[in-house]
Amino acid sequence: MIITPKIKVTERIEKIEFYEIEYYEDFDNDLRLLLNLFLDIKRVYFSFGRFDMFYDGNIESLHTEIKNEIKEFGKIDEITSFEKDNFSCCGFLEFNDKTINTVINIFRLYYSCSFDFFEKNIDYNRYFEIKKNTYKVGDIDGENLFKELKYSYSFYKGLGPDIVCLSYDKIKSLPFWLRSNIPKPPPRGKSFMDKLKNKIYGYPWVDDEVDP
Picture 1 (cartoon, rainbow, N blue to C red):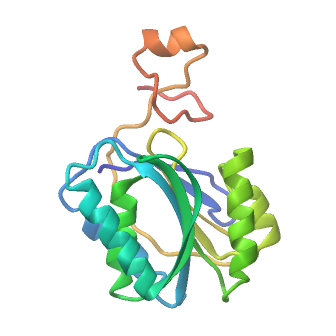
Picture 2 (cartoon, one colour; picture 1 turned 45 degrees about the vertical axis):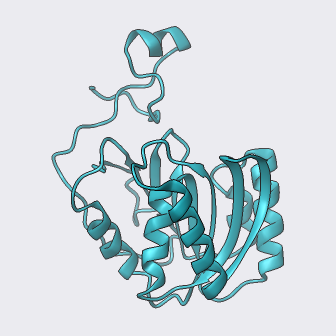
């Protein structure tokens, strides 16, 4: 997948948003480089739901593999389950060189997923309750979660159809590498018909007007 940043510039970069345009050959390696920066944080908390319609592998097989790996190295709980492909889960994984692959697989397989890295282990039961309520009330950015639980980094996909965001608090800084010369996302449509007219319906919208 090709990603392009929209960076909010402050004294420290607080949030970087990546817009999915297409998968590219080295995407998994680039994501692995990013996740390697988190290895000193020994546990990753996550949530995910629905299958990504663009995943071109064996969905059921990888879904089973992911759940088994989570059960071996962490914990997983179901939040909602309406249909075979309409569900949401959350849990945690002990984070190391092996489970990086699990995180990458989660990122590739599911339409919506988030990964939260906290400075220390937190009360999982409380995390589960907040995540469960987040799905119910549509707190997509996890604002309630981050207000209540001190976090270091959050990395998530969804919100768009396929917006990806890496965010972190103002105290820590994070070295990272971004691909350059990538097309910017289209401007926000003013109405539903405007979105259709400009063939940009379904894109993750941005706050500022930019050239397509």
